[in-house]
Length: 476
Ligand code: FAD
Image 1 (tube, rainbow, N blue to C red):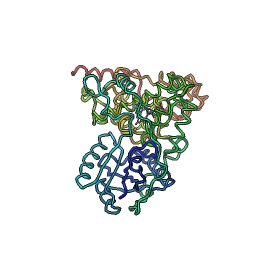
Image 2: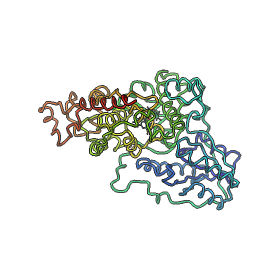
Image 3: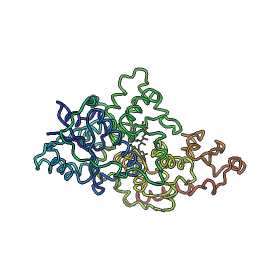
Image 4: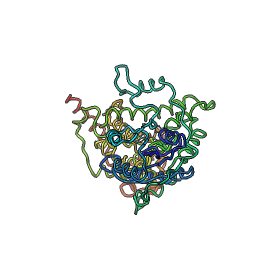
């Protein structure tokens, strides 16, 4: 009887252990994607990722069709769906790649047991990470909470296993089970179509991921160490959404950076360290399932957030009056993505200048990022807030003007995403509120009309944040 392979956030043919094991020896395979119920936490995704998922599923189905197979779409509770398909096809074997986020494990562990009780053979495989989160532990046997020793342990633990090739052909079952119509899942935005500019930079799917990796290695990896911090440059890989949907595995990326004789070692190591941050975030999430909901540093449970709705809304719209923050928030609207340096600045601004709970920012990013990831997003927000494991301390507060001047000195990034400032003299591009009137006039800017005045004074906000932090320090 055919083997079911259940695909989740691993929409690829290459380096897919469950698929390779199922397709070995020419067995018939039924590739399956299940739209899981929203209350399981495995769906629905944020709006930006729904867009991505739609295109990624189409691309994946096409790849499967090219090698003699297909992709079955079904909705519902996975146990019911699998039992139904078993009745339709006679299949009593199912393979999948493991997931490590709390919603995923909360579904998969009891599901596996229920299926085995019903006489199914269930096999699960690794593949989402370089190493399983149960592999690396610190000297006292606990999970790592600090990045640098984690990285050292990861480096010392040897190379991850070599990626495996995609199957050349997959045998079809005698009878295909019924499939739903993907178009009817309504994953794409209706009016207004806020995702229309996503295709400027993204090609969801395994082929898009492979092209991105190849271009990155050829054109961008050399010099990555310095260029990665300049938001106006295309200095990073842009692989994050492909990784989030498993269109490429971290192992494939890691191995693609081996044996590059002409690329400086520093650039390769810095890039691999970023992959290790993803890995570290998953380790944190696996061992702290409430990472996205609860402060790891419990002192922050008593923090007095202000939660001003008007400020929050202006932040989401990129109307704070701080150009680097606004450019980042608008890049998020335009491309479902934001440069890492600017994510840090925008997150710090929300948490420390506006004193808004990091969880609101985390939720906004989850809804709007095409690369939204339960581990990296939660870990990064806690890192910026200072409430996390290996966190930047709360009292390190980014000055959005100085950050802008340092990392976007000519204002190229700001001008790209905040066009109303495009003609402003570069000297004032990060501080239009301090520009002399003639400079504003020359650029056609009426502060408070064509571009907002700052919603808060940074020096005031900084003192206020430090005082709020002092309160929770005094309380412990
Ligand atoms: P590259 O510089 O090319 O890095 C290669 C890969 O390494 C990335 O694709 C990503 O998988 C991983 N990586 C890089 N930096 C980090 C990091 N700091 N933490 C974890 N993994 C990293 N990344 C996400 O993938 N999803 C998120 O939801 C997410 N939310 C974030 C929220 C905040 C507040 C901050 C400050 C960072 C967040 N990041 C998140 C991390 C980082 O910003 C992105 O991974 C990176 O910008 C993706 O671009 P890239 O693929 O070009 O990165």
